[in-house]
Each structure stands twice: as structure tokens, then as C-alpha cells.
Image (tube, rainbow, N blue to C red; front, side, top):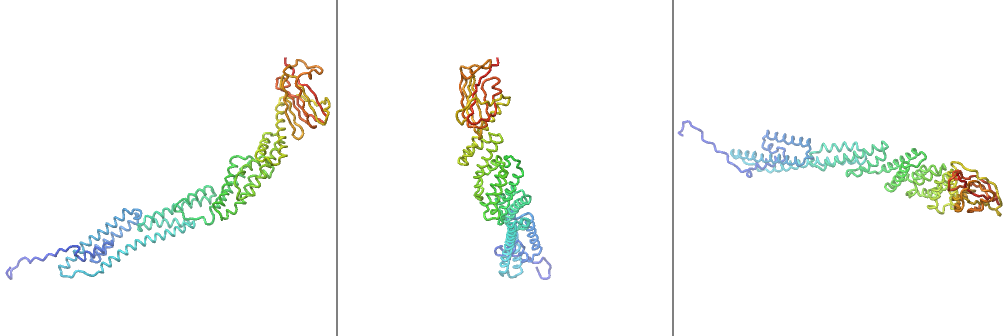
Length: 509
């Protein structure tokens, strides 16, 4: 255009386009932004972007801490990586734009390595921060575990909960899970401790077993507390047996005593070296004492049943109890047998003699033999009582002759068509039963026989006895008055005594 004339200004040169990888500021800004703290924007002095980057990063961290980054690792790690990558990519373009403007203005592009060093420092700082959060969380977990190991679960649970809620930014799922496992284990320990406080010892043992089975259990029974619980539980069972005993050895009594014995014997085996283990020998001896109290009171039959509760159990921790059982078990049976003979219960007495002859054949053999004889006598007397329940005829003790020696002789002729039974019980348990066969040629009498005619027919029964007082009974298997009212009586017979009689049956026709 000619000079002096107005017109459009000359066109300005367009800034040259620069490749991102050839832009020093782009690389530096991206590296600084990769920390997520917006340091690249600070480097470019783009304050709104710097403030925005800080706000986004802080917001993500707060949200992650609240929602639970460690519990949702697959969600939050990608979110943070995407944010860091987006900030870095945006930094590339922002840095290139700066370099393009600088070239246009004829300025030198940056060559200082400091931004790279700063970026590296920021990356290390971010990693160190996350590592510090993780390590502080691990330290807090160790503090909780130490309280747990002391049995102070109130403090332990409080610290475990603080780890679970305050260290989500550790990004450690393991840390979170271990804190929750610690809470679960400590709650089991508190349950067991509460059972002990409430004296629910059986339940406490189950609770402790459940606790020790938990993989996060930290507490160890260094003071023998569980052994003490076993001891208290066994003591309680023993006390229940004593208080519930009414003179009858029932299943509840037996179960309580045998369970107490079982628990006592567990203590020295599983908790050797504890104070409770040292108390077991005395506790077992006391268990036997209170469990066989009827022996001291000379209630022999129930004492025998009480001792049977303990016979056959292991007494390694209290061997003196084994010696007592070996002595008292057969003795209680022997004494029970005599007591029942005197009391008239031949069945129980016979049970005792059967027990002694089978289990202790050498124990007081002479006395047991005597007892067996008296038991047989008692059975005969029971039979006599049954036979005379509806009435009896008097035996009569008339002496009819001389035996010819120092013995007593009883002769009875069975002049009847029925079998005849003769039962006797005498001094020192002498007893017997003699059955005389029916006389096949004899008939029932319609009138009493005369003279000695009754002695002419039939089978003669002869019984020779030692002198003394005897209870005698004669009966028949046939019908009639004599069968329902046998001859019965007690006769004192001295040496040389002889009685002869004839047994016959009158017809009812």
C-alpha cells in the first residue's frame, strides 16, 4: 500500500505447532501432575487448575477414607490411577501450549532438571504417605493384639475398630480383615470370661474351646485360668451330686460324680504345672469320700452302689483311692449281704454273695461261705412265709423216740398219693428242703388211720440234724386243707431227739 494510505494491518505469524514429546514443559508438567497434587499447574502458574487438582485429590481421599478404599480396592485403585493419568495427560497439553507461546515470543525453552526431581520427590512423598498410613495401621493393630493377648478385650476391641475405620487409606485389605478377625476373637474371649463370672463353668469351657479354635486368638492361658475353670466345674458337679443325694444312687448322681472324676483327671494331663493340677489328688480323694459317704455311715448296701460308681475308673493321680476301692468294695458287699439276711431280703443278699464269689473269690472266704448258707436259709424262710400266708397247722414238738446218737432225727412217712415237701431252717443258717415222692399205692383217707397203719405204706423220709432250734414246715403238692394250711412250727430239739410221724391226706368227699 502506498505510504500515507490506511488499510488492514499485516497478518501476524501463527505460533508454530510443537510435538508434545518435543515440548520440555509438557514433559515436566505431566511428570509433576502425575502425583495427583496438581504440581504441574503450580509449575505453569495456572492457579485455578492447581486449586482444582488439589480439591479433586483431597475429595477423592476423603471419600475413599469414608467409603472404604481398603475394602473396595478394585474400585478405588482404578479411580486414583485414572485421575493421576488424566492430570498427567492434561499437563502434557498445558505444558505444550506454554512452550508454543514461549517460542512465539522468542523465549528459551526450559532445560532445568529440577521439575523432574520435584516430580520424583512428590511421587516418593505420595508413596511414603500411603506407606506411613499402612505402617501406622499395622502398629495400631499390634497395640490391639497386645491388649488382646493380655485379655483386655475392651481396649483391644476399641483399637481394632479404630484400625478398621481410620486406616482405609492404607489400601491394605489384609489390615482390615485382621482387625475384624481380632474383634471377632476378642468377643469370643469376652463371652468365655463372662461365663466364668456367672459361674457357668461348663458353658465357659465350651466358650474357651471355641475361642482357642479361632485363628485370630491371641490370649494364652499362662496363669492356668482354664485349668481353674475345670477344677471349679468339677467341684460344682460334686456339690450337685452331694446336695441331690436322697439315699438312692440314681443316674443323675452317678453322672455328676463320674463327670467330675473325668474333668479332674483331665487337668494334670492337659494343664500340667498349673496350681489346679496340684490340687487334683486331694480333690479326687475328696470326691471319693463324699461320693461314698454311706460307707462311713455303715449303710452298706447303698455304700456298695456308691463305690460301684467309682470302680473301674482311672485313679493314677490318687492311687490311694484304688487301694480303698479294693478294700471297701468287697467289704461293703459282705456287710450288705449280712444286713439283708438280718433284714429278711434274701434276694439282695444273694446278689451280694454272687458278686463276691464271682469277683472276689478269695475275700473272707470262710465268712462268705457262712453268708451264702444264711442266704439260702433266708430263701427257705421266705418260702415258708409264703406257704403259711393263708394259715397253718401246728407242727407239734412231741418227741417219739431216741435217735441213738448225739444227732436229731426226724422221720416222716409219706402215706399219700401226693409229693411231700419238708423245709427246715436251723442254727447258724443250716437249712434244707427234702422232697418225698408220692406213694403210688396210697389213697386219700376218708377217715383218720388207726393204730400204726399209716406207717405201713409209703416212702419214709429221714433227716438227721445237729441239735438246736429249728423252724420246720411240711406240706403237700396235692389239694386239701393240709396243702393250704401246712404243718409249721419252731421246735427246740436236743441231742438224741427223734420224732416219727406219718403224713396222709384226708379226702374232701
